[in-house]
Length: 326
Ligand SMILES: NC(=O)c1ccc[n+]([C@@H]2O[C@H](COP(=O)([O-])OP(=O)(O)OC[C@H]3O[C@@H](n4cnc5c(N)ncnc54)[C@H](O)[C@@H]3O)[C@@H](O)[C@H]2O)c1
Image 1 (cartoon, rainbow, N blue to C red):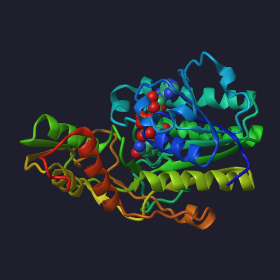
Image 2: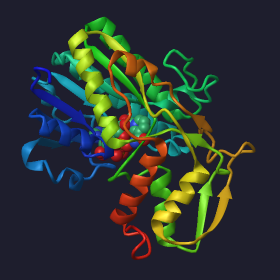
Image 3: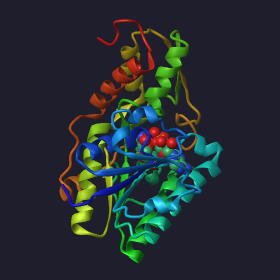
Image 4: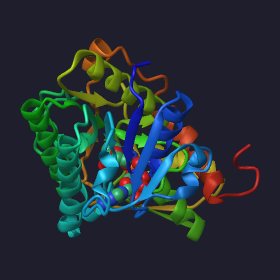
């Protein structure tokens, strides 16, 4: 491991952030978290809360900017990750995803932070023309969330070139695992909890995307960070799986995990069957670059990641017939 001690994780009480914090603490780092708990939960940090410094604060308007003093690396994960609401509430996404990133970069510059790892997203590509999509594919987002991520990425790269801050942009595919509180698996399970007899599915079910398990995601994040610290400069990597899975298949896996037998109702929002305007229909990232340069590769497939997540979330959320999880 690298010789760095003080790390800041923004959004550390979130789904991905809490797993990242656990790993960093396990590896002996001094970890500071800034999170406004808008979608974060302190309960996610219960295994490590007495070994980290937690600051409840809002990155749109930090009350204690001095918190950045002495930080070597910022893992910037704080954001509103709900792609769907960015269609109807664009300003929320501008404020939570662009303004927060700008503030993090400015404070990093001011307090001499050396490295930034930015949690971007596959949505920056929009409806990609090349699949699997490589990092040098044109950036043409079709959601305001994707646009906010793209704007933030460009800002990170510019700060790297202009101010010499090492920067890694990670374009995550759909990340799944325990503690997840958004996305298709969570939505389906919560609907089944409310009404086990009927399941409404957004889209026509033919949407086909790539899913990565949380532990694979944390491995990729740490390896890419180490690579940037060692070599210096600015890097962009896709972080996803080699395969994809359809919403129809996800629905079957989730229903099986619940033990229910609902009537399924598909609800396409567009003539070509998307779940909502701005929903990317097909996403599969090329991960050749991160494999080649960083030496990371996923350990389980999209299907395995979904199966494991559906099972653990059904238990966490208390959804299902007794015995369905055994
Ligand atoms: N989960 C995925 O599938 C996925 C895919 C691609 C990219 N990402 C990105 O990864 C990051 C983490 O996603 P996640 O799934 O863990 O989401 P999450 O909602 O669980 O975590 C986000 C965290 O940021 C905090 N936060 C939000 N706005 C804040 C603000 N203004 N100030 C301080 N804290 C704030 C929230 O309270 C929450 O704890 C996000 O940037 C997201 O866009 C996630």
